[in-house]
Amino acid sequence: MEDNTCKCGNCKKDKFMEELFTKFEPEKDNLIQILNSVQEHYGYIPTRTQKEISEFLNISLAEIYGVITFYSRFTLKPKGKYNIAICLGTACFVKGSEKIMDRAKERLKINPGETTADGCFSIEETRCVGACGLAPVFTINGEVHGNATVKSLDNAIDEILKREKEENV
Ligand code: FES
Image (cartoon, rainbow, N blue to C red; front, side, top):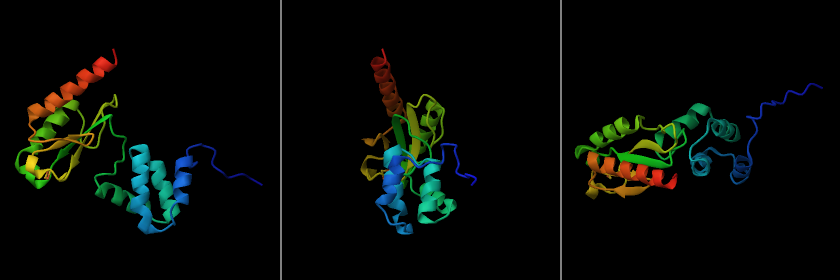
């Protein structure tokens, strides 16, 4: 009999996904929890895993994509070693966080949701991180930088670059 099994190697679930699916019932209500686990494990939601989740929960890829893009904690691309998240929530926005975002884009030559070619930095937009009293705010790997300015962003990036250079000497 003809063997129609795909041999490309990309279609196989890895051990993590196989084990993950044993922890959940194939019910739509489990989508967010499954995506949380995938994001935590891989640092993003690879396309391959979206297809696997779609088959497991019997829901469309479009629906999964909609959920991933709705929640800012889910990403479709790997984040950089240093993820700079700039808050564009109301309190931060009125205090000029857009200028900080513009500077991050200019300085790192990437857009929100992207990672620099060397994998060092990524930037993302966030909505209120619960530190409105310190607005405008950005975070680097979750560490809050309050009362932020274009200059404080530049300083933070300079510091990282310096540290990385020293570590790689
Ligand atoms: S709006 Fe930025 S921390 Fe609340």
